[in-house]
Structure formats: structure tokens, C-alpha cells
Length: 150
Image (cartoon, rainbow, N blue to C red; front, side, top):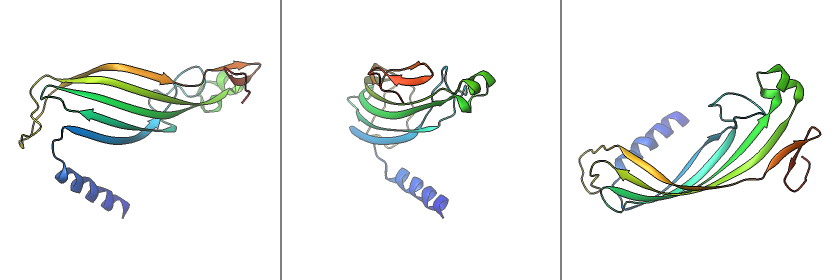
């Protein structure tokens, strides 16, 4: 039943979409850590990530864009494929917040009020700011920068 409802909602929403000057959206997905602790898979989300996006379509060629994303990073050596990491047993959790501001540039005119189907490649550039708690390991225990042992 859930699949039918989801499919119906997707088709229903597509038919209601129109070009807009201001766009607001939310997104949800997953996050994973790739590093010295935990799994070594490049795409294997094990924690949630959510965000919000605002886009101002300034002209047929460019749009200003801002987004805020929050994701949780989890690393556990017990999930590693390496026997040495499994024996070491390190683990950590951290929350990463990202604020991004940038510009999308369309290579072809993308008229927001044209009803015909339009396609254009685009490029995005901007600045991002990350916020997170610094973590390190001392005597086999994970600590943050303030010295709190986890």
C-alpha cells in the first residue's frame, strides 16, 4: 500500500510543478564517514542527514542558492573489514552542520515561464562553512576538544 501511495504522490506532485522565481525545498538522505575509524566503503550511509534549500532564480542564466544541511557521522571499528581495526575497537559519533551559499550558472537560457520541456547543463560554485566537534583518541578513548571522554 505504501508503494502505491508514494508512486501516486510522486506523479501528482510532478503534474503540479511550475517554474518559479523563488524555490524552497527540504531533503533527507544518509551520511557516512570514510577515514581511519570504521568501514572503508565509499558509499554506505549509516546515519541520517537532512537539509533545507532556498533558490532565487534571478535570470534565465543564473540563480542564487543557499542551503543548510545537518548530518550525523558514526565510525565504529567493529564494522571494519580490516582485522586490525576490529581488534583496535575505536568508535566515535559527531554531528556536522554545513551552510552553503553559491551561484548556479546555466549554459543555455532556461526560461522559467516557458511551458515546453527545457534542458540545460549548469555549473555550481560557492562557499561552504562546516561546524563540528573536534575529536581525537587518547589512551583508547574518544575525546572532544574540551576533554570530555565518550
